[in-house]
Length: 157
Image (tube, rainbow, N blue to C red; front, top):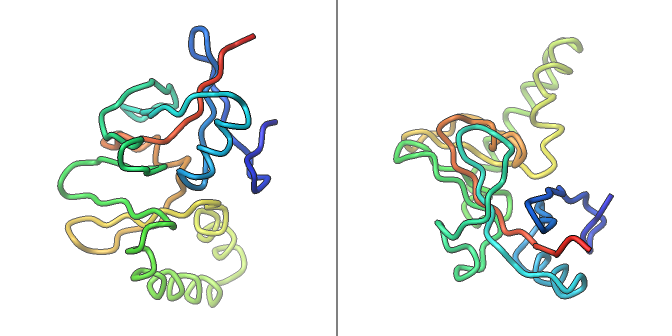
């Protein structure tokens, strides 16, 4: 299992003649990892609700120095926990958590599973209103979403 500088688990994919790692917590984290592994920074895209990555340059993450972006059309906006706008929704997340803690234990366990296990929480906004919280990993499986991540590509030796 590969980990980044913060001992967070990275996702590993084999693509033709290279191995690509994703799951970095920032652009800088990926750049450091790339330097450490003598790798190359690449943009990875996940389309059509699957976990089959492709190397692309559709959202220009390298130029923008971003590590994660989701394009799900005009009505949806995905706000990553590292984005400045995420803090605006922290109160809403706290209300949800407080409400879940007041529910019966069996409902609390099932209902809070998504929030509590979101290692890298993503706030989903639909038509300008808070809709839900998901994880970075789960965002890949939303059919209308195209997920873009910074990755590190290393040759298979």
